[in-house]
Length: 387
Image 1 (tube, rainbow, N blue to C red):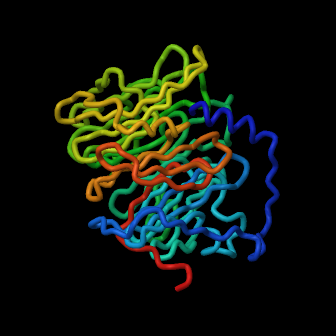
Image 2: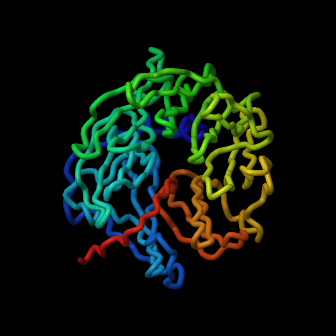
């Protein structure tokens, strides 16, 4: 759990949501903005961006950018699904595309929203309490869950991973892991799960749970560092893992787990709030908070996975990082030679999406929903809402 999570949990204690069905004429329609000239991006037709929305306000939203038209469409879910009560839900925590479907993990609403990839129309909800991240292997999705309610957990309840059949869209099994599991990746027939222990502060969890997918049981726990969060597998051997530290003496850092040996090494001086892997380059943004100094230290780094060293800590080169208050989400389109950074600003008002050329110069910016965070690139162009 990071500082933003703690602040929003405290705020949400004063907010009450009134359930009920939304009248069709009450939803906020989507808005289209021309942000760039129409272009071809190779295999990709566009990308979706899930805005988390500040906790307790039911403000998770979905945006879409279309390369062929150069248009950015904000808040597309509501008008495409006017009969869905409370719209997309409360706190969008992850977004993935698989098998013609969009899967949005809606954390505080306790479900996975499943949509049709062609038109973003609702298919179903899969109930999972305090769900966090989703990954796939074969015909199954794997979703991490804190298991209990949102907030500090005096009962010391462990989390679990839910196994979902992507044909029936139903939970078929669960596997208990560590405390407050976050992101997970599949490598060599195993599921690696980063446990944070975020509700147990200051006694954070520091382990990666290793699940054998055939038996769907934990076969090993690997110690890494306190308060683990994000994970990326390079598709060959190594998993890159972020640790948020304890916001006091233990600082955020990045670790490498060798899936052949389960040995762990640290990348020195690489704080990590979010990351993405593009070829041999690990792009890392950090917005590290210290309870001691009461300040944030922001960095934009690239780690060369072949040379095993940081090649830059300033991948934005034109000075426009000064316009970014809270770097939050990151994505790279290598074919388009672009990367994208989102700005969560104050966590309670609309954020920004910034597009940069690969050499770090800003090309365009657009307003998003609240707390823009999670990207999912698509090979299929989204059908117009008028079709």
